[in-house]
Image (cartoon, rainbow, N blue to C red; front, side, top):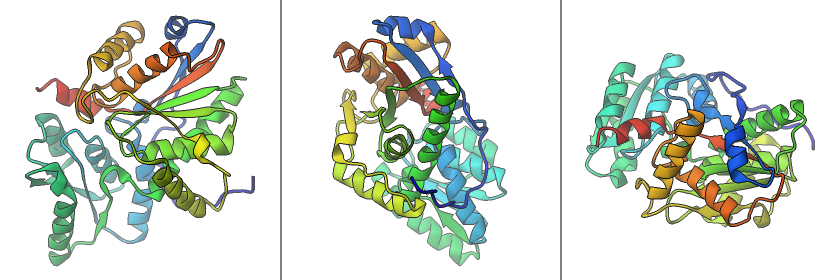
Length: 321
């Protein structure tokens, strides 16, 4: 593979995040399987999680454009908003967050600690309109805002998890470990796009699977198109095909809804390993991984990596209900 383009980014997180072997869970999976967690919840900014790697690219662009603030938004369970605000603080930019009025006390209070300006909308489907309105008002007041789309769901957003997979497979090589499966959770599909592209580039014999936490998931064709756009940015070609996408559903009633299986998976991870998952994203994703094992999708002796993509804001939110 020819060298990839260097895309400007700014260092925000503490990298590499740990690749942690969990023997108890490996034994629970059975048949000599080995289980590992890639701890992106421990990346050192705010509450951690997958958005920090993406912000390294977006905020580098914001600074290069001379922006003085960011505007982003999300639903009442969004981890993106507070993660973006925390990262913005780290580089001296103020943050404006467009969120529904139903947003709970945890993100509101964390936002206050970060000096966030909230712009409330009545419903989640009004967030994009609210972002446009906030941009209009800020520009009229003489500010130069940088817009980050909800979920950081753009081709540039994919690059953070190409970086993460390069990091993961480098760690595996140092440990003389061949990873057979990497499993992550998926909402918009942007993180998974980075996972599957990075896996194809750096460990093509590894299977990359996403656990959808909603009843529907981004179509493979849409993921493929966005990955091609990311490849243009990187100046590379992965020869990725539709067969490289593996989607498993474990959503219950859908996005934002906890499930009995997800709760049981959260409790098992906490009580066996002392690691917290959240009820909307990583808890359901880990439950999906356990379902895959029950269905025989992992083979005897496989090494399986679960990407812990954060979600701690959602966990805190669940305690206030």
